[in-house]
Length: 111
Length: 114
Image 1: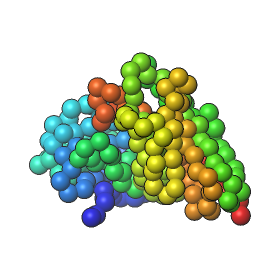
Image 2: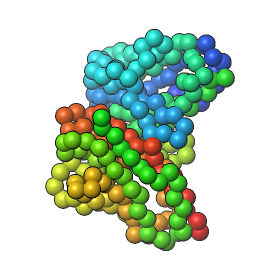
Image 3: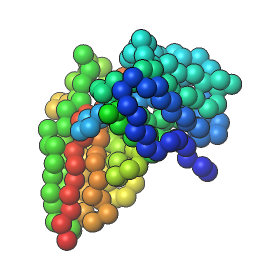
Image 4: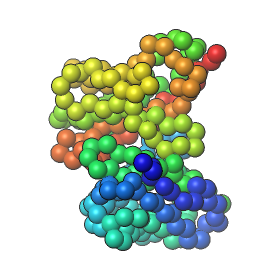
């Protein structure tokens, strides 16, 4: 069984530029999560999807962050424009019951 | 507010020694508790979880954890550490009314010396 796939694995951009991250969850998993993990911290939930619906986006900074999950499978997280403080690892996870399976993450560096 | 505390930022042990990583949580109801491990450049892998029942939980890779309600703790243990156990370990709590929402601690980095 393939795991959660994320791309790119690394991204370096200048501040004020846009950036997008892509996630392909485990087949059959209806629930998809985006987390942000700052250096030396645990992951923090940004948004959770149940199929196509964003059921918890209370922690998503909506002025610059957006996400979509068309057709309830793949998902894209976008930042526009990026700020220096957005440098972090962005993790995607998927779940079918109570266990979340995490992808390897995208390490974003904003210069 | 719900929170998870991992008081040890960094722990160093010798290979073959026993290990205990501490985790304390703050939550008014019965929590769902998890331990994850993260190797460099990798995503998080679930080691074990506690939902109910036996308070001593067995996980993968020889790890176990014990839920102690009176101490609001869920410490992770391993009797004999292997060099491959060097990684970052995260404790997390799932809120009983919404087990999908996980709150993570700040992690403990484990270093293993030969």
